[in-house]
Length: 547
Image (cartoon, rainbow, N blue to C red; front, side):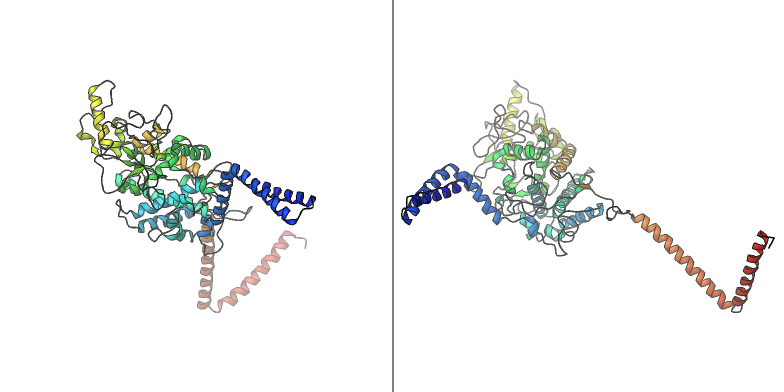
């Protein structure tokens, strides 16, 4: 923009010079245009990249499509900020999401897993919403991201268009006049996590209480537009550099919390048509269950680089390399996943890069014995650990048997290559969150605890005004007025009903007596009147005897 301003100024200066010299009109045009062209070339040469980026963002901003414009509210104007919400409203939204998920086909294999696809899509939508936060730019969980951006490809399916005929918009329509879209999406994502966690608990036969509801607060304001928000998302190709930039620096999470939050990758998969990556983070059966399989898979398996996916040099990933791996489907990890546990060179702090490095990330089984036996059916790199003698023993430096075992283990994990280079150390995870990944793989309970903290921070960043859910019996009343609970109203109604019953009973009895003794009423009335008068005067005479 500065170059255009300078060039325009040059054109005017050239015109003024010609006019001062009393030259012809074409002098103004000729000299001014030459000066204009020269300034444009010189300035654009220095600012070309900046101008292109600016113009690109401007064009994208005009073409951007945001969720608030896509989620229709037929019941009336959608509320942009939730003013009041009870626990019952949260439960109702969660029940609707759970019902929608339950109606999807439960079948799940490497080709198709409807429940996993919908769950992963909705969580990805909410993740891309809150990952654009920074103190300088704002953003966060405001229900806003550019749906036309390449990184958000495929999200319209579960949000509006319908993933297997179901979409979040169908549920949102019932709450749009009471709950902001920003709050709704967070609740919907938590509902997905709760539902898929129940599947994990049911299949594992454990009873581990886990709920994000106690930490939920309402009052998020929906943003109608957020130009450039998608540009703030992490690029998996940039490995842990972008994890640090987005999760640690911008969102304020620790490395442990960042790794815990990445555990949502256990749900769903990456598709070529959407992200350009291809495969599941977990095996097909675990891809619809909210468990720690993401971390177990990372450390209980081996991986080799897969460069230029589908011929695209800008998309590179790591594929499962166990010799005994299934050929039915594809299990993979991205640079930004494996860098949490592994590094190419821990001394020089060189991140993993599937596009240029020929090494195998793996660790010896002794480090993940709890993960192998508790969560992975005793399997390590596709083989039963109990069938391999000594594999459950730690590596001992200088011990010949340990060296032989390590070669066998490397071959099992690294596509049969005994002499393949290791990514970092196999004796200890050397990634930026290596200790955290190790702890999460061996202890699912600990992962869930850290995930609760990380999720709470991620969904409330930059929103100090949020409020806790009210109890179900509470109702919103005007400011300064007295709040009447449901219990109080019930007590008041009970008293009114009793009084009405008593009055009705007295009226029925009076009519019944009048019907049985028709002549008695007049006599009783006269007697009552006389008695009343006498007693009245008598009382005054008694009190004032001088009268």
